[in-house]
Picture 1 (cartoon, helix red, strand yellow):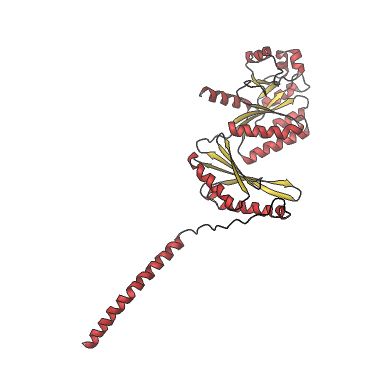
Picture 2 (cartoon, rainbow, N blue to C red; picture 1 turned 120 degrees about the horizontal axis):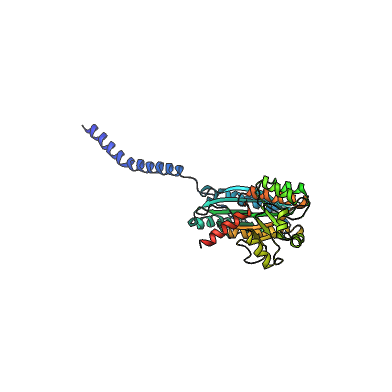
Length: 352
Protein backbone atom coordinates (compact mmCIF):
# COMPACT_ATOMS: atom_id res chain seq x y z
CA UNK A 1 0.00 0.00 0.00
CA UNK A 2 2.80 2.36 0.87
CA UNK A 3 4.54 1.70 -2.44
CA UNK A 4 1.35 2.22 -4.40
CA UNK A 5 0.67 5.38 -2.51
CA UNK A 6 4.13 6.74 -3.39
CA UNK A 7 3.59 6.00 -7.12
CA UNK A 8 0.31 7.88 -7.13
CA UNK A 9 1.94 10.77 -5.34
CA UNK A 10 4.75 10.88 -7.90
CA UNK A 11 2.31 10.74 -10.82
CA UNK A 12 0.27 13.56 -9.40
CA UNK A 13 3.34 15.68 -8.74
CA UNK A 14 4.78 15.11 -12.26
CA UNK A 15 1.50 16.01 -13.92
CA UNK A 16 1.29 19.21 -11.95
CA UNK A 17 4.81 20.19 -13.00
CA UNK A 18 4.69 19.21 -16.70
CA UNK A 19 1.18 20.34 -17.61
CA UNK A 20 2.12 24.04 -17.87
CA UNK A 21 5.09 23.07 -20.03
CA UNK A 22 2.80 21.20 -22.43
CA UNK A 23 0.52 24.25 -22.55
CA UNK A 24 3.41 26.57 -23.36
CA UNK A 25 4.65 24.18 -26.03
CA UNK A 26 1.18 24.02 -27.59
CA UNK A 27 0.95 27.79 -27.70
CA UNK A 28 4.38 28.01 -29.33
CA UNK A 29 3.43 25.43 -31.97
CA UNK A 30 0.17 27.28 -32.67
CA UNK A 31 1.88 30.64 -33.03
CA UNK A 32 4.54 29.15 -35.31
CA UNK A 33 1.85 27.66 -37.53
CA UNK A 34 0.04 30.98 -37.65
CA UNK A 35 3.24 32.77 -38.62
CA UNK A 36 3.91 30.30 -41.41
CA UNK A 37 0.37 30.68 -42.74
CA UNK A 38 0.71 34.45 -43.08
CA UNK A 39 2.54 36.09 -46.03
CA UNK A 40 5.96 37.41 -45.15
CA UNK A 41 5.96 41.15 -44.52
CA UNK A 42 7.71 43.24 -47.18
CA UNK A 43 11.37 43.78 -46.59
CA UNK A 44 11.97 47.47 -46.13
CA UNK A 45 15.42 48.52 -47.20
CA UNK A 46 16.61 51.85 -45.96
CA UNK A 47 17.20 54.23 -48.85
CA UNK A 48 20.85 54.90 -49.40
CA UNK A 49 21.79 58.46 -50.20
CA UNK A 50 22.39 58.58 -53.99
CA UNK A 51 25.39 60.33 -55.53
CA UNK A 52 25.02 64.06 -56.08
CA UNK A 53 23.83 65.02 -59.56
CA UNK A 54 27.04 66.85 -60.37
CA UNK A 55 29.28 64.03 -59.15
CA UNK A 56 31.11 61.67 -61.56
CA UNK A 57 29.32 58.64 -60.08
CA UNK A 58 25.79 59.98 -60.69
CA UNK A 59 25.38 58.90 -64.33
CA UNK A 60 26.99 55.53 -63.61
CA UNK A 61 24.53 54.71 -60.81
CA UNK A 62 21.40 56.24 -62.36
CA UNK A 63 20.25 53.17 -64.44
CA UNK A 64 20.59 50.94 -61.36
CA UNK A 65 18.46 53.36 -59.34
CA UNK A 66 15.79 53.27 -62.05
CA UNK A 67 15.69 49.47 -61.87
CA UNK A 68 15.38 49.57 -58.08
CA UNK A 69 12.37 51.88 -58.45
CA UNK A 70 10.96 49.53 -61.10
CA UNK A 71 11.30 46.55 -58.75
CA UNK A 72 9.58 48.50 -55.98
CA UNK A 73 6.68 49.40 -58.29
CA UNK A 74 6.19 45.80 -59.37
CA UNK A 75 6.21 44.66 -55.72
CA UNK A 76 3.86 47.41 -54.54
CA UNK A 77 0.05 47.18 -54.15
CA UNK A 78 -0.16 49.13 -57.41
CA UNK A 79 0.40 45.85 -59.27
CA UNK A 80 -0.77 43.21 -56.79
CA UNK A 81 -3.94 44.93 -55.56
CA UNK A 82 -4.91 47.20 -58.46
CA UNK A 83 -3.71 45.08 -61.39
CA UNK A 84 -1.46 47.65 -63.03
CA UNK A 85 0.12 46.34 -66.24
CA UNK A 86 3.06 47.60 -68.27
CA UNK A 87 1.80 48.74 -71.69
CA UNK A 88 5.00 50.05 -73.29
CA UNK A 89 8.68 50.72 -72.74
CA UNK A 90 11.04 53.05 -74.57
CA UNK A 91 14.60 54.22 -74.04
CA UNK A 92 15.32 57.81 -73.01
CA UNK A 93 18.52 59.83 -73.02
CA UNK A 94 21.33 59.83 -75.55
CA UNK A 95 24.71 58.28 -76.28
CA UNK A 96 25.96 56.23 -73.33
CA UNK A 97 23.53 57.77 -70.83
CA UNK A 98 20.22 56.00 -71.40
CA UNK A 99 17.45 54.65 -69.21
CA UNK A 100 14.03 53.03 -69.82
CA UNK A 101 10.74 54.89 -69.57
CA UNK A 102 7.93 52.49 -68.74
CA UNK A 103 4.19 53.17 -69.11
CA UNK A 104 1.76 51.31 -66.85
CA UNK A 105 -2.03 51.37 -66.87
CA UNK A 106 -4.70 50.45 -64.34
CA UNK A 107 -8.43 50.91 -63.89
CA UNK A 108 -9.84 51.63 -60.43
CA UNK A 109 -12.78 53.29 -58.67
CA UNK A 110 -12.39 56.99 -57.97
CA UNK A 111 -12.55 56.34 -54.23
CA UNK A 112 -9.33 54.30 -54.51
CA UNK A 113 -7.29 57.29 -55.63
CA UNK A 114 -5.73 57.86 -52.16
CA UNK A 115 -4.50 54.25 -52.06
CA UNK A 116 -2.98 54.54 -55.54
CA UNK A 117 -1.25 57.78 -54.62
CA UNK A 118 0.02 56.28 -51.35
CA UNK A 119 1.42 53.26 -53.17
CA UNK A 120 3.50 55.47 -55.44
CA UNK A 121 4.30 58.00 -52.74
CA UNK A 122 6.01 55.19 -50.79
CA UNK A 123 8.62 55.03 -53.55
CA UNK A 124 10.31 58.01 -51.93
CA UNK A 125 11.44 55.61 -49.25
CA UNK A 126 13.24 53.53 -51.89
CA UNK A 127 15.19 56.44 -53.33
CA UNK A 128 15.14 59.96 -51.90
CA UNK A 129 15.50 61.32 -55.44
CA UNK A 130 12.07 59.97 -56.50
CA UNK A 131 9.44 62.58 -57.34
CA UNK A 132 5.77 61.81 -58.06
CA UNK A 133 3.35 64.21 -59.83
CA UNK A 134 -0.36 63.60 -60.54
CA UNK A 135 -1.76 65.16 -63.73
CA UNK A 136 -5.56 65.20 -64.09
CA UNK A 137 -7.17 63.78 -67.22
CA UNK A 138 -10.80 63.70 -68.28
CA UNK A 139 -11.18 60.04 -67.30
CA UNK A 140 -8.56 59.61 -64.61
CA UNK A 141 -5.00 60.81 -64.31
CA UNK A 142 -1.41 60.37 -65.34
CA UNK A 143 1.07 59.86 -62.53
CA UNK A 144 4.57 60.90 -63.54
CA UNK A 145 7.35 59.18 -61.60
CA UNK A 146 10.87 60.49 -61.95
CA UNK A 147 14.30 60.11 -60.42
CA UNK A 148 16.27 63.31 -59.89
CA UNK A 149 13.83 65.08 -62.19
CA UNK A 150 14.16 62.60 -65.11
CA UNK A 151 10.95 60.78 -66.09
CA UNK A 152 11.21 57.00 -65.57
CA UNK A 153 7.58 55.84 -65.28
CA UNK A 154 4.15 57.06 -66.36
CA UNK A 155 1.16 55.41 -64.69
CA UNK A 156 -2.15 55.91 -66.53
CA UNK A 157 -5.08 55.70 -64.13
CA UNK A 158 -8.57 55.22 -65.59
CA UNK A 159 -11.76 55.52 -63.55
CA UNK A 160 -14.17 52.60 -63.78
CA UNK A 161 -17.09 54.96 -64.41
CA UNK A 162 -15.31 56.58 -67.38
CA UNK A 163 -14.35 53.72 -69.70
CA UNK A 164 -14.13 55.94 -72.77
CA UNK A 165 -10.65 56.55 -74.19
CA UNK A 166 -9.63 60.05 -75.28
CA UNK A 167 -10.34 60.62 -78.96
CA UNK A 168 -8.49 62.50 -81.66
CA UNK A 169 -10.06 63.37 -84.99
CA UNK A 170 -7.02 63.48 -87.27
CA UNK A 171 -7.29 65.26 -90.62
CA UNK A 172 -4.49 64.82 -93.17
CA UNK A 173 -4.63 67.88 -95.40
CA UNK A 174 -3.05 69.36 -98.53
CA UNK A 175 -3.71 66.27 -100.65
CA UNK A 176 -4.34 66.26 -104.39
CA UNK A 177 -0.89 66.78 -105.92
CA UNK A 178 0.53 63.26 -105.50
CA UNK A 179 -1.72 60.25 -105.90
CA UNK A 180 0.81 57.85 -104.37
CA UNK A 181 1.07 59.87 -101.17
CA UNK A 182 -2.71 60.16 -100.93
CA UNK A 183 -3.12 56.40 -101.34
CA UNK A 184 -0.50 55.76 -98.63
CA UNK A 185 -2.45 58.05 -96.28
CA UNK A 186 -5.72 56.29 -97.02
CA UNK A 187 -4.08 52.89 -96.41
CA UNK A 188 -3.14 53.84 -92.85
CA UNK A 189 -4.63 51.48 -90.27
CA UNK A 190 -6.35 54.33 -88.41
CA UNK A 191 -9.53 56.00 -89.73
CA UNK A 192 -7.98 59.37 -90.52
CA UNK A 193 -10.01 61.97 -92.38
CA UNK A 194 -8.53 63.56 -95.51
CA UNK A 195 -8.73 67.14 -96.78
CA UNK A 196 -8.17 67.57 -100.52
CA UNK A 197 -7.18 70.76 -102.31
CA UNK A 198 -9.50 71.68 -105.18
CA UNK A 199 -8.34 72.03 -108.79
CA UNK A 200 -5.20 69.93 -108.23
CA UNK A 201 -4.03 67.26 -110.69
CA UNK A 202 -5.50 64.39 -108.64
CA UNK A 203 -8.24 66.08 -106.60
CA UNK A 204 -11.08 63.97 -108.01
CA UNK A 205 -9.06 60.74 -107.90
CA UNK A 206 -8.20 61.22 -104.22
CA UNK A 207 -11.85 61.91 -103.49
CA UNK A 208 -12.79 58.66 -105.20
CA UNK A 209 -10.17 56.73 -103.23
CA UNK A 210 -11.49 58.23 -99.98
CA UNK A 211 -14.90 56.82 -100.85
CA UNK A 212 -13.43 53.39 -101.57
CA UNK A 213 -11.49 53.35 -98.30
CA UNK A 214 -14.54 54.71 -96.40
CA UNK A 215 -12.68 57.76 -95.11
CA UNK A 216 -14.30 61.09 -94.32
CA UNK A 217 -13.55 63.58 -97.09
CA UNK A 218 -13.11 67.31 -96.57
CA UNK A 219 -12.43 70.20 -98.91
CA UNK A 220 -9.15 71.95 -98.14
CA UNK A 221 -10.37 75.53 -98.57
CA UNK A 222 -6.97 76.98 -97.73
CA UNK A 223 -6.04 76.92 -101.41
CA UNK A 224 -6.31 80.30 -103.13
CA UNK A 225 -7.57 78.57 -106.27
CA UNK A 226 -10.74 77.55 -104.48
CA UNK A 227 -11.48 81.08 -103.43
CA UNK A 228 -10.96 82.39 -106.96
CA UNK A 229 -13.26 79.88 -108.65
CA UNK A 230 -15.95 79.70 -105.99
CA UNK A 231 -17.19 77.08 -103.57
CA UNK A 232 -19.44 75.14 -105.95
CA UNK A 233 -16.69 74.78 -108.52
CA UNK A 234 -14.26 73.68 -105.83
CA UNK A 235 -16.71 71.06 -104.52
CA UNK A 236 -17.08 69.83 -108.09
CA UNK A 237 -13.41 68.83 -108.11
CA UNK A 238 -13.68 67.16 -104.68
CA UNK A 239 -17.01 65.31 -104.95
CA UNK A 240 -18.44 63.87 -101.78
CA UNK A 241 -16.84 66.32 -99.34
CA UNK A 242 -18.76 66.51 -96.05
CA UNK A 243 -16.77 69.35 -94.50
CA UNK A 244 -14.13 71.99 -95.09
CA UNK A 245 -10.87 72.99 -93.48
CA UNK A 246 -10.20 76.71 -93.36
CA UNK A 247 -7.26 78.78 -92.17
CA UNK A 248 -7.93 80.61 -88.93
CA UNK A 249 -8.84 84.23 -89.57
CA UNK A 250 -8.42 83.89 -93.33
CA UNK A 251 -12.09 83.18 -94.09
CA UNK A 252 -14.98 85.61 -94.44
CA UNK A 253 -18.40 85.52 -92.81
CA UNK A 254 -19.96 85.06 -96.26
CA UNK A 255 -17.83 81.99 -96.87
CA UNK A 256 -18.77 80.55 -93.49
CA UNK A 257 -22.43 81.12 -94.31
CA UNK A 258 -21.98 79.35 -97.66
CA UNK A 259 -20.49 76.32 -95.91
CA UNK A 260 -23.42 76.10 -93.53
CA UNK A 261 -25.97 76.46 -96.34
CA UNK A 262 -24.46 73.42 -98.06
CA UNK A 263 -24.43 71.37 -94.86
CA UNK A 264 -20.64 71.31 -94.54
CA UNK A 265 -19.07 71.25 -91.10
CA UNK A 266 -16.06 73.50 -90.65
CA UNK A 267 -12.68 72.69 -89.13
CA UNK A 268 -11.04 75.95 -88.23
CA UNK A 269 -7.95 75.99 -86.01
CA UNK A 270 -6.91 78.71 -83.59
CA UNK A 271 -10.24 80.55 -83.61
CA UNK A 272 -12.27 80.45 -80.40
CA UNK A 273 -15.79 79.22 -80.99
CA UNK A 274 -15.24 78.32 -84.66
CA UNK A 275 -16.30 74.75 -83.91
CA UNK A 276 -17.27 72.79 -80.85
CA UNK A 277 -13.92 71.03 -80.45
CA UNK A 278 -10.45 72.44 -79.95
CA UNK A 279 -8.45 72.11 -83.17
CA UNK A 280 -4.68 71.99 -83.45
CA UNK A 281 -2.61 72.67 -86.55
CA UNK A 282 0.42 70.35 -86.64
CA UNK A 283 2.91 72.12 -88.91
CA UNK A 284 5.59 70.24 -90.83
CA UNK A 285 9.17 70.71 -89.74
CA UNK A 286 10.45 72.08 -86.46
CA UNK A 287 7.07 72.83 -84.87
CA UNK A 288 5.78 69.27 -85.19
CA UNK A 289 6.80 67.88 -81.80
CA UNK A 290 5.67 70.93 -79.84
CA UNK A 291 2.25 70.88 -81.54
CA UNK A 292 1.82 67.15 -80.87
CA UNK A 293 2.62 67.63 -77.19
CA UNK A 294 0.02 70.42 -76.93
CA UNK A 295 -2.51 68.19 -78.69
CA UNK A 296 -1.91 65.29 -76.28
CA UNK A 297 -2.17 67.57 -73.26
CA UNK A 298 -5.54 68.82 -74.45
CA UNK A 299 -6.98 65.44 -75.38
CA UNK A 300 -5.96 63.86 -72.07
CA UNK A 301 -7.52 66.71 -70.12
CA UNK A 302 -10.60 67.31 -72.24
CA UNK A 303 -11.21 63.88 -73.74
CA UNK A 304 -11.32 64.95 -77.40
CA UNK A 305 -9.61 67.19 -79.90
CA UNK A 306 -9.05 67.64 -83.63
CA UNK A 307 -5.67 67.80 -85.35
CA UNK A 308 -4.79 68.89 -88.88
CA UNK A 309 -1.50 67.52 -90.19
CA UNK A 310 0.18 67.40 -93.58
CA UNK A 311 1.71 64.40 -95.30
CA UNK A 312 2.72 65.80 -98.68
CA UNK A 313 6.10 64.02 -98.70
CA UNK A 314 7.82 60.82 -97.59
CA UNK A 315 9.31 62.37 -94.43
CA UNK A 316 5.99 63.74 -93.19
CA UNK A 317 4.25 60.47 -94.00
CA UNK A 318 6.87 58.48 -92.09
CA UNK A 319 6.53 60.73 -89.06
CA UNK A 320 2.75 60.39 -89.16
CA UNK A 321 2.97 56.59 -89.35
CA UNK A 322 5.30 56.51 -86.34
CA UNK A 323 2.98 58.74 -84.30
CA UNK A 324 -0.09 56.63 -85.05
CA UNK A 325 1.83 53.43 -84.26
CA UNK A 326 2.86 54.89 -80.91
CA UNK A 327 -0.74 55.74 -80.03
CA UNK A 328 -1.89 52.25 -80.97
CA UNK A 329 0.87 50.64 -78.91
CA UNK A 330 0.10 52.68 -75.81
CA UNK A 331 -3.60 52.05 -76.28
CA UNK A 332 -4.74 55.16 -74.41
CA UNK A 333 -5.86 57.25 -77.42
CA UNK A 334 -8.38 56.42 -80.14
CA UNK A 335 -8.23 57.99 -83.61
CA UNK A 336 -11.69 58.48 -85.15
CA UNK A 337 -13.35 60.31 -88.02
CA UNK A 338 -13.50 64.02 -87.33
CA UNK A 339 -17.31 64.13 -87.51
CA UNK A 340 -17.49 61.79 -84.50
CA UNK A 341 -15.58 64.35 -82.46
CA UNK A 342 -17.96 67.12 -83.47
CA UNK A 343 -21.09 65.01 -82.94
CA UNK A 344 -19.96 63.78 -79.52
CA UNK A 345 -18.95 67.26 -78.40
CA UNK A 346 -22.24 68.81 -79.51
CA UNK A 347 -24.18 66.04 -77.76
CA UNK A 348 -22.23 66.58 -74.55
CA UNK A 349 -22.76 70.34 -74.69
CA UNK A 350 -26.49 69.85 -75.31
CA UNK A 351 -26.75 67.73 -72.16
CA UNK A 352 -24.95 70.21 -69.90
